[in-house]
Length: 281
Image 1: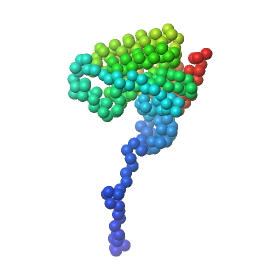
Image 2: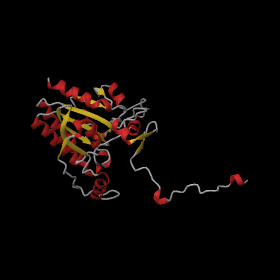
Image 3: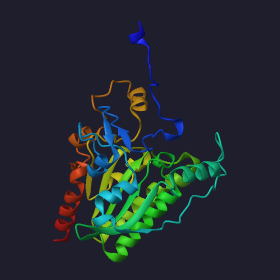
Image 4: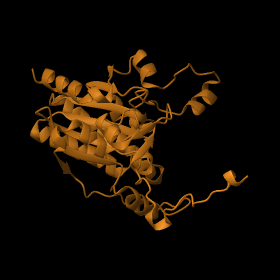
């Protein structure tokens, strides 16, 4: 059995010389489970090239997709949440804010920026789900209000990209007040006849859906996005009935008249530019 013996060492590379793939180089599609290279994913607008599943992304990626040459001016960047209720659950709210800011590099669950889409000026406010589930707190409401004020002052269209789990429980009534605040500001935008486009992404739920997310002159969504007010389990327990297949997907919501269009992220910029040019006439 001498042929079975290994005469030479197998792996001769030392531990120090071993090379590993850098973190973030590869992703896995949550839908089809195939491996996606980060460079290909970015080129494909963070949409799976195999099954067209739209991966969840944040404001940085949406700004990259929409703004010409990824050039924009971020506004109101220094706004941060306070702790008016001195809220404590498993940890103090102030500690949760600090930890989330350190982890994500974000100041809160929304960023606002001014730039151009195919040469057309626009103001965009985009939510980030990574910051406490994209929850709507005082800063989110204030940034949206200031973004609308900027649109009114500069007379440029306003695009709201929603991605949220709903109101932020740590701010209780202060959070719920943002529903009325943002809706009132949007009424001023409507009176001034300045276009407001609402883009609903996965997920858009709770108080966000019940306020500014559904108030657009045009309401559009990405394919397969979860859109609803309460969760399916809560609704099922309330009405005591089984829910339809595909309930609360953007396709279901479109079919029942709450959306105007569903737009693939890869075609989003061109579609928005077309809307902006039409609305100028």
